[in-house]
Length: 239
Ligand code: HEC
Ligand code: HEC
Ligand code: HEC
Ligand code: HEC
Ligand code: HEC
Ligand code: HEC
Image 1 (cartoon, rainbow, N blue to C red):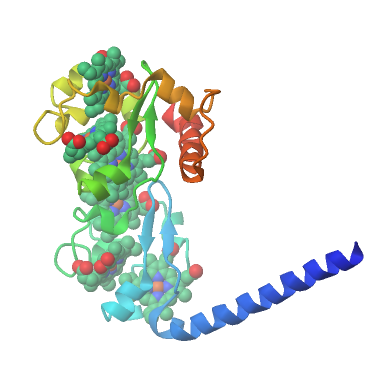
Image 2: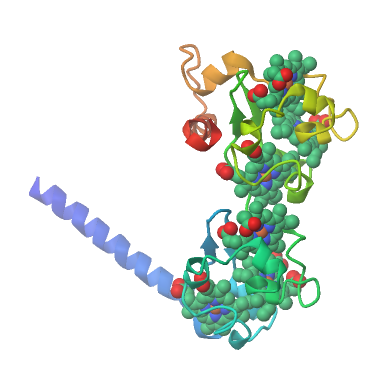
């Protein structure tokens, strides 16, 4: 027993050493002094933003002093803690907006996907009918839609918002609002057709929730996706 533990210890020790060695090699390839931190700076409140030093320093040749100490401190979290980091302050020419003004660099009210990342989880509505699904990646990657084709007046970048409105109904869709902005029979299939493509129904919902005893899905990937969907459905934001 002791031997076994010892072997495990040594395996852990060796792999840790290997990891340390390999990361120090990786660090040598990327010059932190010259280009700033290697890992992206990520903000998640309220919407995920990814900032890469390398793109700005190594690729675009911007000096550290163009961003540090104004508009950013050389310490992660300071901008977020100021409580002022938002699209509004960017539009007013602060923070990223110092350059992302359509002049020095692309404007902050364009190329949303450059700075933001869409959620991987399916968005699911289960009231008043079970259940309507929406898949981001399909709409952005497969159909090539820009974030602001939906995240303008049609949808907020916050799950649960549309679901709270009494106007999030088939009638509104038929009137060209929400999903109906595109699902009008021209840009995409009409909301008055293919009901089951959006409405996976109670059966589909139950299968997703794994209440269905017949759904012993052997496909690992599908199961992982289901797991993600379930965690999303159960999160209060979506209900
Ligand atoms: C285009 C703007 C920009 C440029 C240029 C830039 N940085 Fe940064 N840097 C940032 C932002 C944004 C943060 C995060 C600040 C925050 O969270 O308040 C940051 C944070 C840092 C941090 C803190 C990281 C941490 O984990 O706490 C270091 C160190 C840093 N930068 C070094 C550099 C160096 C060195 C350079 C030049 C080679 C550089 N930066 C150039 C925008 C920039
Ligand atoms: C140059 C980078 C950048 C671009 C481009 C950008 N954003 Fe942002 N966005 C941010 C930053 C930084 C924040 C504030 C931090 C956070 O929410 O994590 C933010 C926050 C937000 C928020 C949260 C609420 C608010 O108003 O601050 C929404 C919603 C949002 N962005 C939508 C969009 C949309 C839609 C687009 C495209 C039209 C877009 N963003 C383009 C950087 C960007
Ligand atoms: C000192 C000026 C400056 C500041 C401040 C700045 N950027 Fe940039 N950024 C640039 C320039 C210049 C480029 C390259 C030209 C372009 O893409 O328009 C760029 C490019 C980018 C890109 C494009 C990456 C790609 O895929 O090509 C993203 C994303 C980005 N910036 C995000 C941010 C975010 C988020 C912030 C705030 C945390 C920020 N930038 C602050 C100047 C700046
Ligand atoms: C075809 C329409 C459409 C497109 C395109 C789209 N979204 Fe969304 N997005 C939605 C809908 C619908 C919601 C849910 C809104 C609600 O429940 O009120 C949402 C919600 C979100 C949320 C909130 C997630 C949460 O858990 O609170 C984020 C973040 C988001 N979208 C980011 C993006 C980004 C980034 C892009 C572009 C890469 C994008 N979206 C493109 C329709 C779209
Ligand atoms: C493009 C996607 C989409 C298509 C196609 C679609 N629906 Fe809907 N449906 C929704 C959304 C989104 C809601 C509002 C959210 C909810 O009720 O869960 C909704 C709500 C409903 C409701 C609840 C009551 C109401 O009127 O809002 C019923 C009933 C309904 N749909 C029936 C149908 C029928 C029948 C069809 C086919 C003729 C259909 N739907 C096609 C997306 C769609
Ligand atoms: C900005 C335009 C736009 C909006 C808004 C939009 N869609 Fe779509 N959607 C498309 C396009 C384009 C396609 C692909 C073409 C087609 O299938 O007709 C598509 C396809 C789909 C599909 C079929 C995916 C597949 O292949 O299985 C579903 C389901 C769907 N949308 C649901 C929704 C729901 C639900 C909403 C509202 C929450 C919505 N869409 C809002 C443009 C949009």
